[in-house]
Length: 241
Image (cartoon, rainbow, N blue to C red; front, side, top):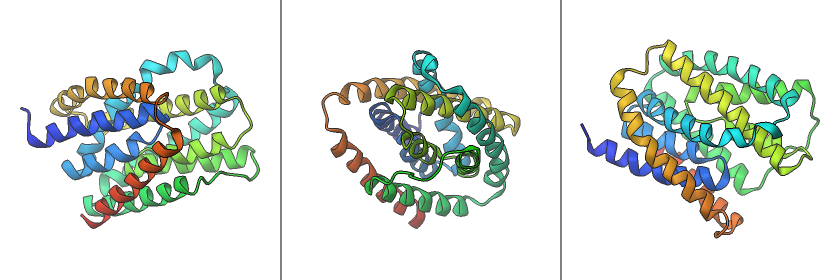
């Protein structure tokens, strides 16, 4: 049954996919909190997960050859474990607490993006472990992508852009896969949830392709500033609501 909330979810999925397709990340930071407001946090997160998984799955084959596996695998392994640990917090906490923490994190990340902050410290197994664990804990415990932590870390390295992008995509793909498997284990993906999530998939894919097209027509700096401002607004709304 198509409800008003599901219609708004379809619109949200399309618009957030445009952001994801344009910038490579950030769509989830906007989509998940909106879905959490339309539904409860766990259901909203579950509905967001499948479209994101399939969206990444469509573009990941073209990037596999550029992945730096020696860096991606250790970071992803720790991130995956942290996701499973974090999900226990997500599924046992009250909806209100999840929304408040979620909103605060989104505002914090948006401020960092507006200030164009970049990691300039050392890069070693310890820092990779901290980044992987932090990314996974945020993703698992709040349901929103902890990707910006990982993205800022990968972009701080002097690698070719295609390698940076491939590392980001592969880590995001692994994290999303682990997150979905965790939700399946906990019995979150019931038939109704899967059917509603499938409805969002074509709109997310269409938005992703439109975002990739807009990448060559709209200035990157203007677009990312607008998205960061939107993140701050959404984060504050989630906290207040």
